Image 1 (spheres, helix red, strand yellow):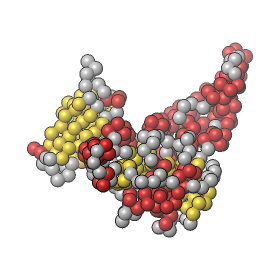
Image 2 (spheres, rainbow, N blue to C red):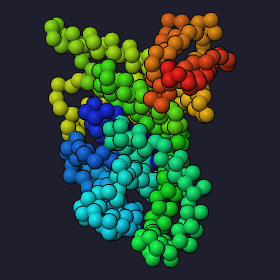
Image 3 (cartoon, helix red, strand yellow):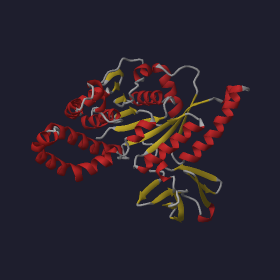
Image 4 (cartoon, helix red, strand yellow):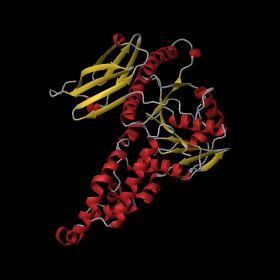
Length: 395
């Protein structure tokens, strides 16, 4: 049986490592064999759990293991032949060895290699739950389209390129003074591509895998989470909950912190508008730093209360966006509403939908900055908005 996989991501500094560790401890206390792993290059999971973790799962409690994935080890395991060939090629062109070594790994690949640990845990089936503390959202978002690109490369390009290079290799060194990749390089690339395709199937399996967005009740943080939410829906990844961390408690008092709390309450309205009907889990700003078993368990209790932390908390994509050939369709379920209750408008990259007294705000991808609404329909409880790309560059 496939392990339950929960990925936590969010803007840097919002407390997602603490939330991931608290979730893992709660799952372990429920008797589930749980591993929590960090793929963030700046690891802080050891500090959070107060355990010395390594690149392989280390037991740090009953039913609980922790792991800090080392990107360098993953690259050596998956990319060594490619690195060797590219390094030699760059060195032959006069690039110094240190720079050549850095240039053999494209930006974002270290995080990608780290995420392949999800596939290994899935294949090994040693754990009931896999909790992933991902890199900040900017790094994670760059990886969302990789599996689709990899699948296309594997099916369309890879077979032909391998044949062409094999045929050209005898001429390349003599005529071009260029060493073409050997079979070991192609084997590395093929293994990586196949692993990416397999990982994509795991991440899009809504019965067992979901993403949870962590944010603080600050407008800029929420806006970034809204953009992430749209991209996750765009690529078919299920968001089953959003976590609002560090909410000032009601007893904050008057004065400076009371003003902050008032601003946070306003921002919570934006959270409800943007992410409904996805469950919103709220944790207060605790009076102590969330480090160690006691504080992590307290955070877990605040977040989940009577909720099963390992359960898929929401089963459907909250919105669907499909863009093809200069047109895009946004589908948005709005149950229990009538057509005459619905209105919408687009302001920049934001689409604001109102259904009676309720409002929903959707942030479109930046690539749709020049798109403008062309029409909308409402049938069987689903609103569909059609956009087209503006030739004049205006939204």
